Length: 343
DNA sequence: AAGAGATCCAACCGCCCACCG
DNA sequence: ACGGTGGGCGGTTGGATCTCT
Image 1 (cartoon, rainbow, N blue to C red):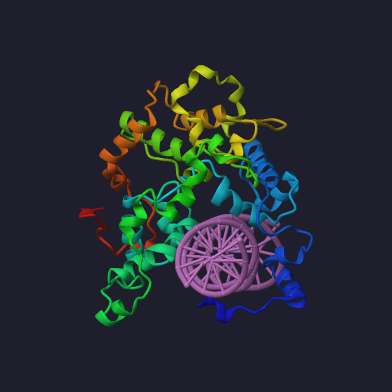
Image 2 (cartoon, chains in turn cyan, blue, orange):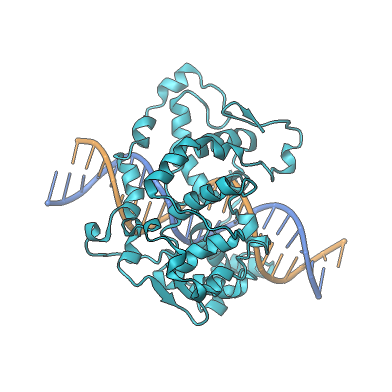
């Protein structure tokens, strides 16, 4: 474990480390730490929207944030990024994580690269809080992916009923879904405002990706690499946001966005947040997704129920995502098998 | 109803590495 | 070649929330 090498860095040590170019953050006592406020989120989001992802160390100053660059980067990657998929992991994602973990170990970033819309942190948390226990429960050592001895399996006291977990009524699931599925009238007064720039993203990501995949077989969902490096997807300049004033109401089917799936934050606030050079709105987010893939086709927007049905029917689509960026560590590995499919 | 324990997950920490001057 | 710097990563923490008694 790394911890044994870690030295408690207090002022004097910290000074030297700073001189060595390491973690200068900790000496800047004035910088804020902890949870991000909606205002901070909005500032960071608007800054990245307007100026793109450049030098993280300069972002806090330019965006007017009392945070270190690392903190801003993390917040963007794990929460504000527009391509994030939210909500429960699907069975396909879960199987893929387990298979990838068997090959890659705790290389969460590499695993996350194979799961569009998921962050390494999210996958790591999911693994530590749930998958590990599930594997142990089913008699598999999560570290080696080999069968546990019977004794070890019996000694595993913590029991997780996975089937029950997948049911909509499971408390843990309700916890994560509540903000998406309750209507504003059901939610009552909002006590903890949250800046949620992409409250529909669960809908957008899965629905649009599915639709695009249907009509454009070459289409692949956005991933972190695309966002950070590809001008084709254009997030560094956010064309969809910058030009959102050109979006008309008729571009979006009224049926495609159900207010019942809005998050608390947006149910309780204006749907448009003004910035100096950009306007934050539902329409802009939606159109960015469409602009991002440069599709000229008019797409039929399916109802939520129809979309979910089709997703279920095409549940194997996820397995078709190519493993494009496995590291050099995998050079010796010929294939990766997921659900009997070889990659 | 209340308190304790368990769990989740956002955020932090420190190490490593690539890049640059 | 070397040191400074920024970014990426995995491990860990601690506050919030949930469950149990």
